Image (tube, rainbow, N blue to C red):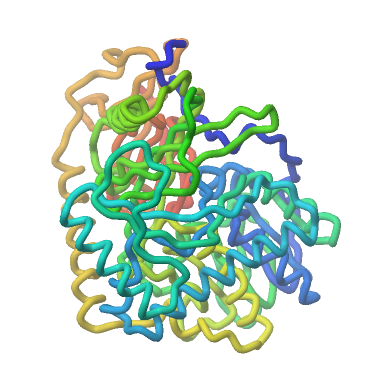
Length: 507
């Protein structure tokens, strides 16, 4: 493969690690707490609850390495691009400072856990930077620097970075970190197993029946009855009148890992403008150092040629670094709330024993860890000073109404657009390893032709709320443009809020 080529099929750099598998749930059971989702939030929740003495069951729809945590850039940082000036403006200085302190505590918690249990996860302390590319970026960075001063953040403006190209301004945050997320989850899963936590993979939760002892129902009709339920499935698959589908926005971005000849910048970086450019490094056990570049964000499922997004990242890498090879590429899906602060806590005010953690806005390593601590404290009836900041029931009249209407209008627009667009191809017109919208017996459908010429045809109507999915050509997935559900070519659910697969069709 030429150094200018990107692998045909996506694969995350982090998923080269062998991880033990766990059985699916095969019976009805009872426990103290049911945790749904085995990413960093779910696994950390199970760990903290186990340490409190609770009996915990951890469910995962796929495998513990296959979800969002296995597709991150894995920066462990409180520098969430340029967020603090915005938080001061929208939430006030006190809550902006709480947001910073919550993420700093999460960073320290990850470090403490991996040290306590000797988890080798390539954890390194690094300086984090946001850099600008024009004068507008420079102005925004200067405002962020003033926010750092107001909040007492350890960092500020700097002219000293390791970037190999010119920039208009830069702001740094000291003593941040990066790590290998799958090695960390693997170590945590081993600890859970050794301490009696039951882990079930390939066990998709499809319903939660509320009550004094909520019941989680799986797709195979097994139930787990418990005192508390934690929905840590990235997007809540059960809404329970919380209107989460209308208060969240899904965004996709793309990442590649390249072997380069020259020095890779020390530190972790993200630019201030758009499209995003995220930069970090990682060294494998053989001593090879990889440049990890991410960006090209877009609203999930909204039609575009995603292979071109990868090409833009490749061009960026070649422009600024001497690339030898690009052996890995993958993508991530990130969930944003109306105000960029996660929703963590009771799913509604009237349902205090069902908790949700979502909306980490690209910064799930610290936000997810902090969410696990907050939920554990709530279940344990212990005080947590971040409860009000992250409460899913919070509402800020002017800003939230504005953003709520914007997201609702976008979903409605995509719903109508999908129904109007009809397929102009026949399934047989597709090339091998190609998918797209086609016409089957005069009706719109989705088809994928694999490398052996076999066709799979599905109804592209999302099983969540009926929007029409679009084909993602770099990931080989069907993506919903309304609320971010994703499906494999054969219609199997990859990511919620959908719980039911796309309907298969016959030619």
